[in-house]
Length: 214
Image 1 (cartoon, rainbow, N blue to C red):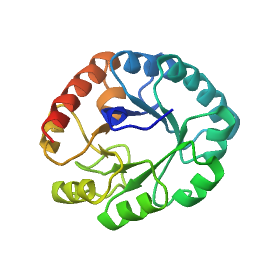
Image 2 (cartoon, one colour):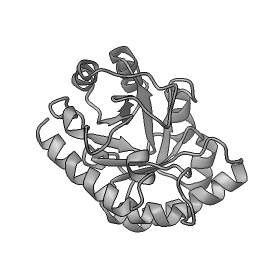
Image 3 (cartoon, rainbow, N blue to C red):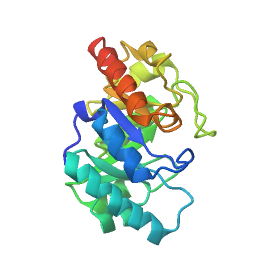
Image 4 (cartoon, one colour):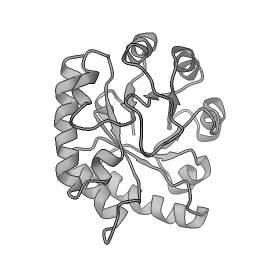
């Protein structure tokens, strides 16, 4: 499945922290029905067999709705479940290595915080960039803050899609207008809410409005 600028509009990163009695698969389907355009499965604590089972379950849903699906960092799980690709950070598997393992037809996304990192990721074969944290993040406590000016400079420095991430919510999302980003990636703004469908719909509508002003 292709990675497009439109697929960055509402990029969902999963988190099991607020599941309660719900299942992750059900929540993922809900947010896709609400307008999510991209799904990243992120599991830092789960063992590989359980991670793979979950990835297969989520992939069946994203396939049904034709939404791109990537695995956070774990190239082996991505290959085993047939995911559309992976997303890697600066301290994870390198972009070049991930590309070599996955081949030319899979998606490789890279987290960046600087123009230099952004240019290098593009040169190394990244299909899109995740830039943040743009407002600070409660789910990634070690994330570096990225200023609006730096975000705008990164968007201007590359030709691949860019999604902003980190602390984004309905109250601050429109502050990204004019930066050049193609959409937003969210975690707690959707999964920590009592109604994930309504939360995703609100964020998605705001993202469309924000992008139209970029």
